[in-house]
Structures are given as C-alpha cells and as structure tokens.
Image (cartoon, rainbow, N blue to C red; front, side, top):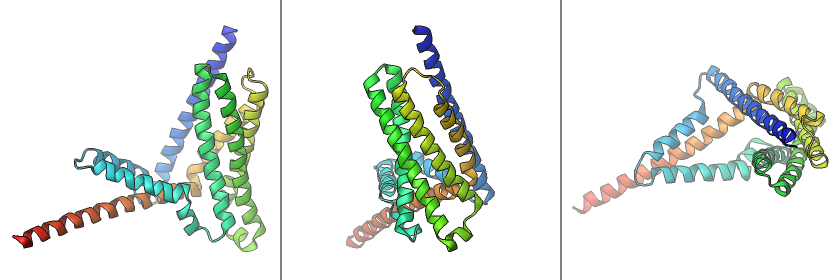
Length: 252
C-alpha cells in the first residue's frame, strides 16, 4: 500500500512539474512573440508597475492594486471589455464560458493537488467533481465559439486557421479533463489512466500553441488596458495634488 501511495505521489509531483515547465515555456514564447511586434510585453510592465508602487509611500501600492483589482473585475469577470470587442451576445457568452471554465479548472486542480497530498479524501472528491464540471463549461465555451464562426459565412471566411485550431484544442481539453476527473472519481487508485494521459498531452499542445494564437494579443491588450487605468489614476492624483498646492499658494 505504501509503495502504491509512493508511486502515486511521485506521479502527481511529476505531472505538476510537467505543467509548470510547459506553462513557463508558453510564457517565454508569448514574450518572444510580443517583442517581435516591436512593443513591450505589457504583463511584465504591469508587474513592474506594481512592484514600483509597493516601494512608494503614502499608499501608492494600495491605490495601484485597487485599480488592478477593479480592472480585472470589470474587464474579466464582468466581461465589459469582451462586450466591447464582440458584436454578438453569443460571442461574449462563449468567451465567458471559456474564461470561467478555465478559472474553475485551475483552482480545482491546485486545491485538488493539495488536498490529495494532505489526505482529505472527501475534499478531493468534491474538487474532482468541480474539475469535471469546469471542463464541460470550458468545452462548451469552445464549442460556442466554433459554432458561431462555422454558421456565419462572413465570419467563417475571415477566420484564420490558428483560431480554428485554438478553439478545437479548447474543446478537446475541456472534454478530456472532464473525462479524466470522472474516471478519478470512479477509480481513485488509478494512476496514469488513458483519459489523464490524453488530458496532459492536449494541455501540452494547448500551452505550446497558445503563444502563436490570438490569445497572446488578448493577454497583451488586457494588461495594456490595466496599465492605462493605473497611469490615468496616477495623473488624476498628481493633478489633484497640484490643484491643492495652487489653492494653498493663492491663499498666502
């Protein structure tokens, strides 16, 4: 039993290392592609701005963090920016399902990894159920995005191949992760099951392909919008300080 548990633990850590390494490689490829456009990599600019603000006094970090949080809430969770970019409600809905499904998959996977290694079996089973549902939501979003493009002749005609591939990978990964989670619920002692191996392979392909798809632009644009919000807030704060100084100077 201990040998089987040891193998299972070793396998799960190897999978975690595989995912982390591929994610880092995907980020590097995304950085290289963005730089090839002749622009800065805005996610790094955003991180640098946050670090700079944390070293300031008088609540600079707090105000910057509030702008980032508000931008994330409005543009990501409430999909305000997606609504501005999309001219159809079904397009927004498809992106929303992909977004919320990916968040569910990420959180369930991380918490499931922790709970599995701390021996909380009931929580692990619950998280496997959440992961399965999130995978289906993720796949449904990809299906909506593909169906929207396939049914409209004018949209289909201008859709690049990389978009078709990205959306197809989204569907495949969502379905594979849902099947893998269900299999884990039915047979919790199984290691390296076929659905799980398929999920890892598709995830690897998705992570390596994503930097060369429209996803890179969406991430770059989202970080740029947040940066503009931070800079606009800083300019308003400086203007407020200057106006107060002018008022006080006039009183003397």
